[in-house]
Each structure stands twice: as structure tokens, then as C-alpha cells.
Length: 453
Image (tube, rainbow, N blue to C red; front, side, top):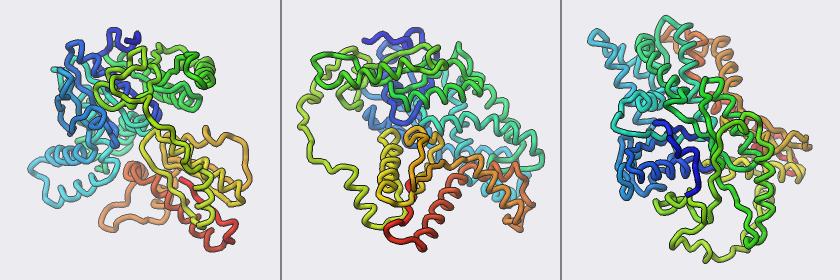
């Protein structure tokens, strides 16, 4: 097995985070299996709404710890945001006591129906796992959502504290004020646990690629600002230069060059390098082989795959989009599959064909500027949907126009900031789409504008 700093006297809590597609789930699964194979009792938890732990481990998972067949001592679970939100609503309503009327409870339930309630509920489940509510496990390993979502989740307690200090008069989508005050210490203790180097290690997973490294450096800085400096770096997919593998020398050299330019914030961290594998990271056999120094996997058949040479080029897709006169291009997919790269390539291709293109992103991590670069291109406008700016724009609109329910008191800025947490990117996206629709009606076919998201 490859010598891993991570597996040398690991802390009880291991928290894996990183850009989508760098291999967080693979490495967290392999770590959990390795520790369980040593006779330890391990709980592997996914906080990703798009979790694929079920597929990786070959077992159906829910919101309770489930034994993983084939790995004695390993249990796994997914934090389901919707289930967590409903459980949270029930707990908040129970705190209201017998004096609360049905009308009071209905009002609170309505306040707890928003997206930010789902976020706080998911964090509440996460907090429970950090608060020694599962003492039977030797290790609890967290496989998190892509960086932008995870950073937003970890920053919530700080935002809630400010909200509680400024808003003493009622409730919001976070729940009744009194109930939140009761949980404030619990949330603070959870962040203290995350930042304690004796209890938790935060593993920044990246690949030896400049874009992924930039994201890891940004994450390291933002986590440090939250008091979470107990970090280490795991470089996944590291290619070992082997002369018999024709054509891979350049790839290995590019990786080496990228690692030689590590920002100081990453270069100073303990580092593990996980070898590049030629097989898919699905199933226990593959996951157990991830940390092995060689590339052998019995029955993988990796060397028997036929060469594929007749796939259409991306330029053909861009030609089809340009010919069809479509005004909106939505690029979607699982984390790490290349959505940003494809969206940027389509946008650049359309601009090169003489079209006016607005390229934007709804991703909190917002990697577009890294991919497209800073050089201006005629006909191409690039931006990101800034959640904070959208929140301020929304609040100003409501406070100015009075677009609020006539049945309730006029909301304050703090209430609106909380309420708008889940919908601020959607409101900006709808405005971008509206701009594209408006421009389409007044443009010639050749120079119709496109919005790529």
C-alpha cells in the first residue's frame, strides 16, 4: 500500500472537501475501508445532496447508519436534506409548547418551508454527528458536497449568530428566535470540534491540475478564516512516469509542474499523493486497490477496452446550436464531469462564429474565470451569479416597493437576507434568461445572443 500520512494516527473526525470531480468520494471511501479493515468501527457520512455512496459501496443507504456488506465494522449513511428539514420542523414546533395555537404553529411551519430551513436542518444533522452522539464509532468520515456548497454550509453558524444578535423580535425561516438561541452553543461547539487539530483533520482533495489547485488554495484560505486551519492536502490521480506507457510523459510532466507551483498556503500542508488508476472507482475491490502502488485490479479488463475513434467533435454540437437559433444553453451534470469546461467551450465557439454570448454560472464555486481566462473576446461577456449581491438587490427591492404579505408585519433586512438564501441565485438566473429572451426578439438570426449557464 502507498504510504499515507492520512492513515498514520488519524483523528476521529476526517472531513474531505474539494472541487467537484477531484475524487473526494473515492478517497473518503478508500480511507473508511482501510480503517475498517484494521478492525476499527467506522461511520462514513455523505453531506452531498447528489451523493453516490450507494453506487460506490454497492448498498442502499438512508439517513441512518447502514452496515456495508463485505467490510466488517464499516457503516455508511447519507444526510438527506429533505428528511432532515422535516425532522427539524418537528423539533422546532415541539419547542413551542402547549400554549401555542394551531394558527401559531401554522405560521411557524410556513416560515420553515424555505430553502434555508433545509440548509440549517442539514447542518443540524451534521452537528449531531460531531457532538459525540455516536460514541460507538472509532472514526467518523465526512464525504462532502463540492467546495462552494460546503463552504456555504460551514459559514451558516457565523451568519446565524449575527442574525440572532440583530433580530430579537421574532422568527424567520431559521425558526423561532428562542429555539435558535438554544442551539447556538451547539453549533459553536461543532465548529470548535472541526477546528480542533486533536479531534479533526480537514483533507483538501485536489488533482495535480492548476484549476483544481487554485480552488484548493481558495478553500484553504476560506476555511482558515472560519478557524479551520487543521488541514492536509491529498493529491488524487498522480501519474507515475513510466517509460513503457507511451504518450504519458507530457501528462506526468504537467502534473509535476503544477505541483512545483503550489501556493504557499498548500505547500506548507502535509501532503499525500494517490496514484492514478486505469479502472473505475466503483465497488469494494476497486476502492481497496486505490491506495495500492501498482495499477493491477483482478478482472478489471481495463486493457481490453476497444479504441473509440468515431465520436463527433464538440465543434459539431456548437454548429448545431448556432444553426438552430437557440437563445439559452443549459449545461448540467454530475460534479466533476466537465460542465464548466463544456459551457465555456460552447460559449467561445458561438462567439467565434459571430454571436453575442453571455456566459454565467449558478455554481457557488464559480470557476468560469479560471477556465476562460482574463483575455477579452469580442462578443463574449462572462460573469458569475454573486449570492451576496443578489441578496442585497432582492432586499432593496422588497424594502423599497413593499412587496410583502399584508397579513404580517413588514420584514426587516435580517429576515429578508435569511429568507432569500435559497432563491438568490435563481432570481439572478431568471433575470439573465429574461435578458436573453428580450434580446432575441430584437436581433437578427446571424447575431442572436446566447446565454450559456
